Image (cartoon, rainbow, N blue to C red):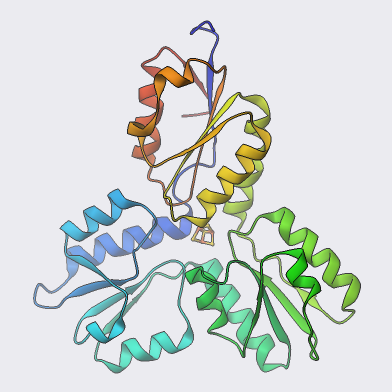
Length: 291
Ligand code: F3S
């Protein structure tokens, strides 16, 4: 394969989404302004990116998973959001609450809280183990959480359904499930709460994967939206690889392939994407698509 002809197509919608950008800025700003005698905590890792979390830790932001640890301190709620009871728990212990919940996640909280109070059975399409979904389910009466068409078919509800989605849900899965539910529940209401940043990323991954021979997906191992980009990429492209940073690129292996596509999850900082591009450029590749 001639080096000159090979191209790298970088997704336009790669890197921090608005929610993550806001959470990261909030955390760094809080670390700067924080009273040195008052501990500053992040309830759970702020984002799914080890380098950013390491930087925050150096600046005094400590990750906690148990709120019993937090007394007379400041606690950051990350973009995934939390259950309503968590707000009460944080406030009870004389803590300052710094809320970095993404506005799009907040909207889902408001929908399920209101519809649940109106008597709807809330159905969340998403991963029951994901903190965002656990947070959403904490704003309504017992939600039904499903993540497949088979689980949708197994729903037995006596109340009208109100269906929402994890913001990073695969749009095709949402369509498949809601198509079935709308045919079987006349009075069901649906909110396609998939975040547009997620949708754009997934659509772009699909388009790029069709044009290249090798897809590189950059993002955290635990990032739900990154894993979905990887899943989409490997379904379409001959070969796809999920990496955390440029060090995991095997340049020798890549020489066996033609054009390369690069997509990145919403928690991936621009500088990590740039490092990957730089490493490939070094090999004489041509970068297209804005970056
Ligand atoms: Fe928010 Fe969408 Fe990002 S829901 S955290 S802007 S992926």
